[in-house]
Length: 391
DNA sequence: TCTGGGGTCCTAGGACCC
DNA sequence: TCTGGGGTCCTAGGACCC
Image 1 (cartoon, chains in turn brown, green, red):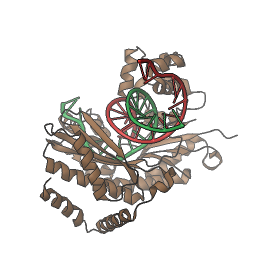
Image 2 (cartoon, protein in one colour; image 1 turned 30 degrees about the horizontal axis):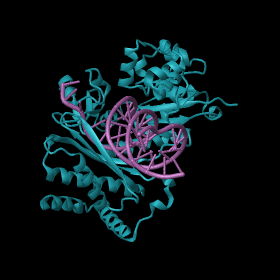
Image 3 (cartoon, chains in turn brown, yellow, purple; image 1 turned 45 degrees about the vertical axis):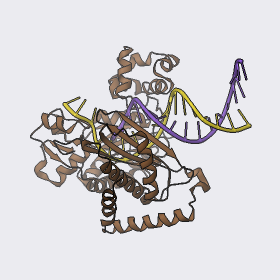
Image 4 (tube, chains in turn green, blue, purple; image 1 turned 90 degrees about the vertical axis):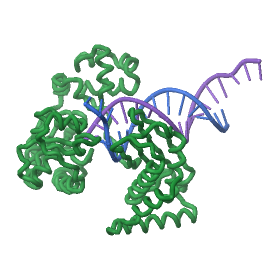
């Protein structure tokens, strides 16, 4: 029987690499893609030249600017990255019929039983890297392992432009060379708890009995750690990913407590979320509003509906009502968000709309179609009118 | 340092029903 | 006047990922 082999492939410093590809004068320079310096926001991706200055993904953009004032600070051009991502995924699909995308720049490839076609795993990986480079001009890192979890850790360990194979039987020795912080799925809070318990490395984590870990870390987290430190896949991404919700949120440049402005933002967020649902042909029967205050404390309120939300107006009425339940007018808001969960496909007839809902949905559809054809004035006009009307 | 925007999954408590 | 046990659904919050 052919052995199970997974590749985890990850494009190196993706957004920054695309910027360098499109503008050769940026090659060799620190490139930082993300929010506008001086504003509220974070680094999305940065080139390896910027990392040498200490800049990292998710770092506040102001701190990145302080560390690397001479860097090229560029806005995110998502459309362009989607194009390049499609090129790279096109190459992946020559090696594996169904690459499993984790995000815009990484995927798992199930390479089990492909040895006759592509040779041993490391040879296949070298050829994949060369093909991606030829097709897109980008470099990738490839991790090879007997399961997805180890393949993911291996590619991270090999970056940039790397290739690392964890062969069956070599799981524990590979893991023992890694810091606990590199365990995918154990973030800051879990790392902090492990430090409190004086668990400092993979081997000492492995020496703890299963039930003890459950007790110390909670059942879910304890079981995850028990499996992960043995190189057993804890089961992330074994199921096909499916869309469960869409969300839209806005962080303001300055904290806001003007009710009219907040209302008009809420309307825009509802429009954007409904447009996403429309584009995917999905319905939502549960809407949530998220509020973040100036001190970063965050509250959420959601309400499930007996029938799916049919129109922007209906979504906005609900969002507005929920917003008022939570909003404290004396506390300015830093962020406002709306999310809508996609209706369970098993919900059956609950997806049906009343006749009047169908009519309102058709109006929205016409507006969204018109926007898609480049006549986007309607969305704005509605928001402005709403703002002018007052509360 | 001062913390985006898009997501997924898990947990715990309360309501409700039998 | 004192009130079980189990199941399901809903809600809010939190951890984590890219």
